[in-house]
Length: 126
Figure 1 (cartoon, rainbow, N blue to C red):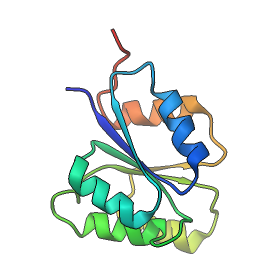
Figure 2: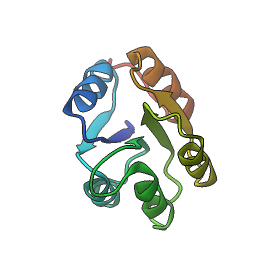
Figure 3: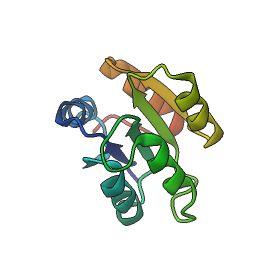
């Protein structure tokens, strides 16, 4: 079964980059524009992996991660923070919530693929 990847970010460009990066792989990409919509999408879609921005409107990434980890149906989903943040307090909060990894913005598509392959069974399209 192909993995489902949810990107929660307020940047349309990030959504485009993620979609483009994975277009040659057998996976489904879903996106949400803020943390509140992201939690709803995660509950609805049950993704295998979530890429999550830290700085967003409505719910920031840490608040979103708290809601994800506090919701039994999606609590165990691997979450990778996509961030330009270097604030140790925020990153420490993400670590405490069992974030699966970090990718610093700006990032290279190869970084997304490499980390994704370490977390889910990602295969090239036949």
